[in-house]
Length: 352
Ligand code: ADE
Ligand code: ZN
Image (cartoon, rainbow, N blue to C red; front, side):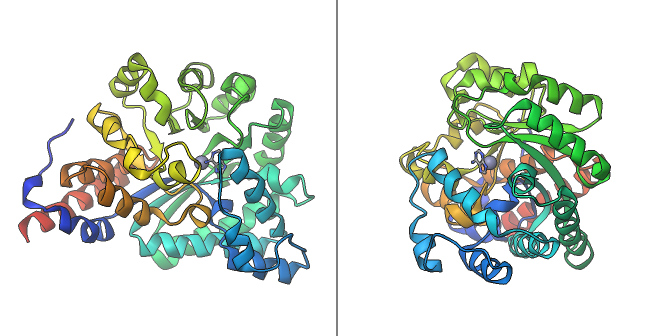
């Protein structure tokens, strides 16, 4: 592990919330459909004449009591049913990007689920153009860089994923990579071996959700069969010591989502979250929001909750902020620039 360019003991725990707020960071695990706040869901439902099975914003929010991943996904896919036009996708992404900017996110790699929309008759071009317009505006007005990662829904067939890839290829310059999300249990990475191989040939970056609810073996097959570069979640690697050693040795990043893990009952409470063990094992763990509108907060809320609850110090904070840029798919010049900005921020707090 690299040594910090400051003395962590000079930054007390009380300073960590201000440090989290001030420090530039990358967010690498955010489903844009999971940033749809209940207020926006209702506004879009009204604008588009879509009827919702909830009487009010409050009634919808009250339904956000999840027992596992599937209980969340059922509501999440229902919420996305209000997205029909380019402007809807743009409004959703712009709302997220403004919140990310307020949290000092300097770079965001954003997941989207085209099959959720194409299955309802929405053309994939509508999705690309709407999200693209918001990302372009964020670059211009906020100085926030973005990249889109197209996720295949793993509860659907590999044939459906291939058909989605075909529809997406005319927009190849609009996305940098491929992910795999939705119901993990019973849908191992192997199911998508051929389509991921094709995406690799096309030069796309590859990531996959694995080891959120699924076993450590799914993390191994995401690496060995799908040949992904990052694991989304991955927290269940801790059940396999050899796998932890491999992830640490190869610096395979894990995009961890603490609030999500508590809301979806991966851990009963934040105090039981095992992020400290991941960091202390030398893993390139990062902190992310997953589906912030559903799980109680955006990326800085995740940082604040872990620092309030877990035995983490300024050294861990520095590692997490650095890891976010180390694990990102930005070019080397941008990476060096962002890492220097992180170091500057920590030096400033250590000197205060
Ligand atoms: N889609 C949106 N959020 C997800 C999560 N946490 N796991 C799997 N699929 C998802
Ligand atoms: Zn996710």
